[in-house]
Image 1: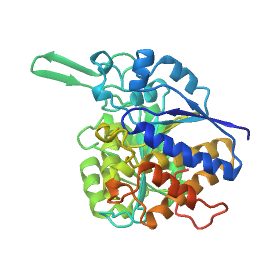
Image 2: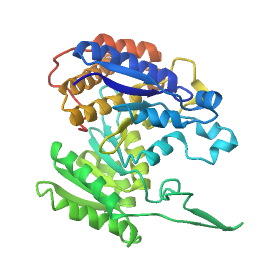
Image 3: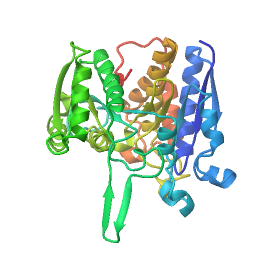
Image 4: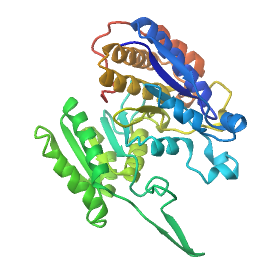
Length: 366
């Protein structure tokens, strides 16, 4: 349980502001818990294009392999020069090149934040490497072909290996929560592809007899989330469906701008807020850092589990509790109809962090 090396990729738009605010509160929590953390600044995004000619240079990818985990700020890849738009964006490239197969996105009601669906606490496990996303389902090249000016063909890739490992991750989480897993698919129409996904998840379920399992078609599941989100615990699904459902659930419990996530495999994890870079408010110190901070809480939970270090878990919970206390006290950024700046919100969290806290409301993802 020595020092931990955490990579810091600030990204574009509001990325540097919300990442710096996140590092600030976690530095304070590390001091309180006695955790040694070395924050490793690495280039990504527009700054990296200017310095290295690439939004995600190889030096960054190689250095990330020597960290315990990292924080990824949002990127503005839609505005990159044309020669970079044809490549995978930085987050997609990291998921693909480092095989971060699990995208884990919780959706939980928070104090002081209005929820469309009342109380809810669920986690979506999204398979992160294949499915219907053309930029992730090929070893080389992309899974789309324009046959003529008027005809495009696209492919989806589904493998037993990918379905098995995301299913095991979901069921292991369910064993730590309310022991319920919902499989989302479209096997009534896509019988071979999502049918394989459903069948493999069902096979994996046999290894977890204590877990209750049900399944829904993707279109029905979207309706069920709107109507009764509180009934769901752990949801496991393929790449595109997981992207859609996690954005929906994030909005239902408050705002996609608050939604956290991590991308992980068995050895590496990346904290990444679900929202974009908001270039229109970049540099104004008004961006909301909650999604980034809660993503980093998830990273600390993941690291605590991997390294058997409960101090990391305490560190994450301390920040989370300080964040919830701030919201309950009415301290919010402008997007939440508050008046706090990004840095003021971070300061409020630091002031409200306490050690040895009990009875916390936690994200509960690891």
